Amino acid sequence: MPPGEPVASNSEKDEDVFSEPKEKRYQPCFKKSDPFVEPLLNFDADTSKMEEVYSAVSHWTQIALDLKAKGYPIAEGINNWKKFDAKTREDARMLDDFLNLFISKNLYAQDKPYEVLRVLIAQGTPYLEFKEKMSRVDFSIKCNTIWENDAVAYRCNTCALTPCMSLCESCFDANGHAGHDYTRFFSREGGACDCGNQDVIREQGNCPEHGDESKRPKYEMNDVCIAEYIVMKLLVRLFLDYRGWLWSHRDFPAKV
Image (cartoon, rainbow, N blue to C red; front, side, top):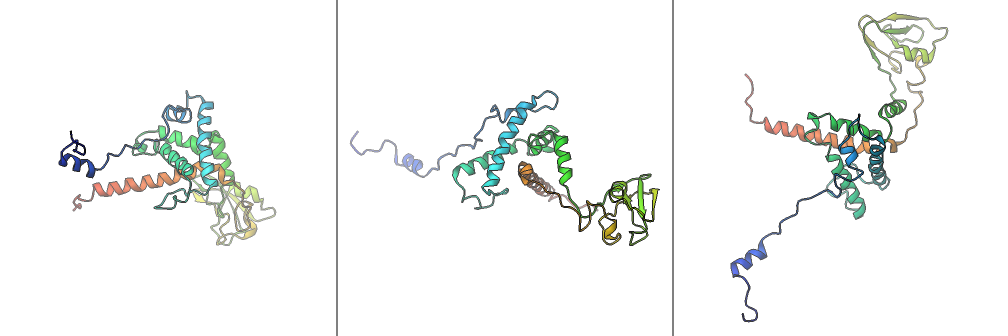
């Protein structure tokens, strides 16, 4: 074959030049058998070894903490991630891929993803203990506790601005209302606690937990660093499902 003779025909050569290379299918940078993935992927509340589960949770918690410390956005936009180095972007992608294992279109059909997400949100703390911890830092100016029929409630005429003001037992006991004109009663039709509601109760009648002068509990945002990513992905998942539902029903005739 003379030097310079094409190996293939011109048409084949042109096809090779202008054809786009096939893109490789994206694969997460972890394996399902990895020790920080498998215990959560196969999590069972009754049989799983919690030491292994908490160790896996600790791995993802540390990634979330590192991303938070570097100011990485919880929700990536068009270009708000470009200023970060490759390692940070890789960690963020890995965390996103991992959460996608549980927050998917099958989320509503299975109970297991909810159990795993609950463990992740607690970040290695037993769920009930974590729930109690969060309740201690939960803050609201108004109590708004709702009670049902036959529940014990109180009405303090000294502190009330309106005759229908009511307090739950917890808020009443926390204040004491010593020397006040009050009544204790069983609610016949249910009700809601007005503690902290400045429209119906004087400031002196509020318990220490409610009202404008109430104590604001201190909390550490690092305790919910994974929860921030999970909640954002759940909202996106809800939006996508709702959008898909509208798309699938767009041609349905209106009922007469």
